[in-house]
Structure formats: structure tokens, C-alpha cells
Image (cartoon, rainbow, N blue to C red; front, side, top):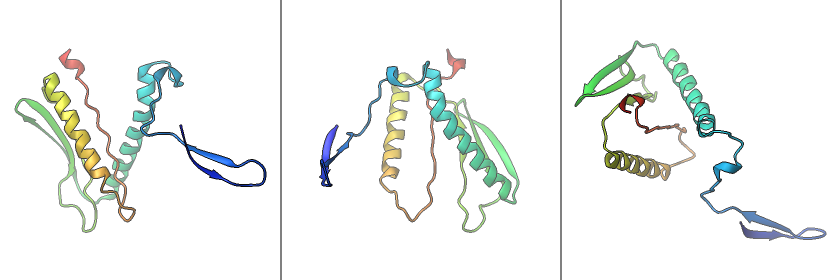
Length: 145
């Protein structure tokens, strides 16, 4: 913790502190009793928000929706998308999943590149444009164990 300013007032001055970023919170001091509980809280809330938002947008667009499933080099890819073009002025929502065979090194590289892409777009934030939410999970499939 670092002192960043001091405000004067009647009596003792008020010292203001700032925690350095990123915050590092040991698992042992969280209220979660298991790693699943710790992960589930944040991801479940984000996933629920994603699903509610996508369902609302999908039901509000007067279009036919399809689930497109395909294989790419033996890997299953699925997309949920409208049949027609996006309405004028409307943003295209995007939902896609991918199961892919990766070595540990490839999975690390995938994660590194995804993080770099997220950081690149994070730096483009502007208060004049809408906020888009992105959540990604890169985990080994239980089918591969």
C-alpha cells in the first residue's frame, strides 16, 4: 500500500492510500471453500449475463437463427448466427465454440496470443462507444483425459 495524498481538515489530516495493481489475493483468504466455488462465482455471473444479453438480442432481431456445426481439421466448431445480414446500424452478436487438439505448448501460445489481443483492444477503450463483454475459457476437455 502506498500513500498518494494528504487532505487537510479540522483535526488530523486524512491520508489517502492506493493499492498497487494488479491485486494479488491468496486463495486462502477468499470466502470460497473450493477452487470450483472460487471460479464458479465470477464465471457463472459473467456467463449468465452473456446468455441473458444474447437471448434478448436474438429474440429482438426479426430473423431466423441457425446453429452451424462443422469440423476443421478434425476439430468441432460451432457458431450461432442469424441467417440474414445484421440490421442497419445494429452490431452483429457473436457466439462461437471450438474444440481443438493442442499440445501443451500450443495451448500456452493460444492463451498468450488471446491475452495479447485482449490487451490490444483494452487500450482502445473510448467512453463514446458501447461496452462489449468477452469471456473465454481455455481448458482441457474431459473427453481427452
